[in-house]
Structures are given as structure tokens and as C-alpha cells.
Length: 131
Length: 114
Image 1 (tube, chains in turn purple, yellow):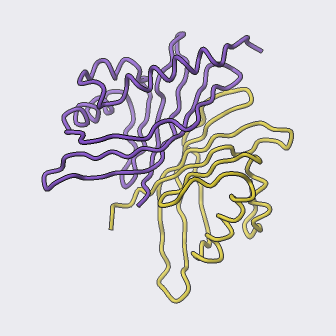
Image 2: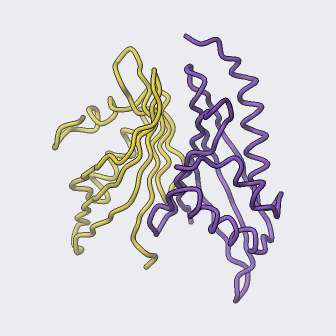
């Protein structure tokens, strides 16, 4: 078994999570450097968005959206004993400026990270909505 | 894999003691007992009749793997027309002393908003 410093890996992952939040950056490339080529986003009411190129388009659209408020965060973050797989879940509430006024979306997410070439990469995220 | 017609106890044994289920339109369901109650309610109150799962991808090795896939489910609410839903799921499997069990379970619909 590898000797993995789980707490150190968690610190790295928390930093990545924060850097990827679209209300913290307007730089698409900054977000994309953490995303694996084969990453997948699994949104509700739609098909999976597969691959970094498709995700890049989504990130561009998200960055253009005016975020009025964003709250929530990671509830639990775990790193597998292998040291190359990590996953978190949490709650989010985001209010975006829509064409006819604020649009609120709230729910839970699960995110998957994999260590590729020594760096943590975002492999995928699924989320759903709560009323 | 659980057999068709399994009771909620059997369903519960698919999950770890500390499992978390994150269903849409619901609070987080924490722990095997609560998971049993959740699926019990889905069957007896909502009228959940059948779920088909199709694995699309498995990531990880060792004692933890994640599985992504698609589901189709059929609900037959009392006195109302049957409902079919299809969507995507992601589960986290953990190897425990009881074998491979589900630690986290989340899904969302692929159907457009009504």
C-alpha cells in the first residue's frame, strides 16, 4: 500500500475546489487546467457533457452568467487509500441573474477527482436539485 | 446485485452502515437504517415498481471505485397513471468486511422540467 498523506491531499483538493468556483475567477483557462481530458458533467434535466472541450464551452457560459449569490460548499471530502482517487459531496445554492430576474438553483453535488501525472484532476460531477 | 422483489432489508445491505444517499428533491439520507426507510417509502408510498441500471463507466481501484451509469425507473402511484423516469447516477463503492457496498449514491433525471 502506498504511503499517502491524506490530510495533505485534502488540503490540495480544497484549494482546487475553490480555484474552480466560477464566482472566484473569470479565467476559463484557470478552471480548465484542473479538468481531465475525459471529465464528465452530469447535470439534471439533460445529457452528460463529456470531455474537456465540451466542458470548456459550459465554463465559458457560466463565467458570463452574472452570479448574484453563491453559498454552500463541501460537506465531506475523502481520499481513497490508493491516494489517486478522491471524492466529495456537498450542498450548493446559487442565484444567477436571468433575463426575467434572479434564478435560484439549490441542490447537492458529488465530485470525483483522479490523480493524473501527479496532479489532481477533476474527473466529473453530478448534481441534482432540491425545492 | 439485489434480486427483483427484494425487501428493504436486502436493499439496505447493498449500502454501508454510514452510507449517504442524495436523492433529488430531498434532504440527504444518512445511514443504512435511513436508507432502508427511504427505499421503503419509495416502494410503499410513491409506488416504485422497477429500476433498470446500466453501468457506463467505472473509475478507481483498490478498496474504492466509482460507477457512473444510466437508470430507468417505473413508478405506479395509487390511482394515478404510471410514471417513467430515466436519468444518470453516480455511486461510490467501498470494499468492506461485508463485501462491496454503496457508500454514496446520487442521481438526477434526464427528462426536461415539466
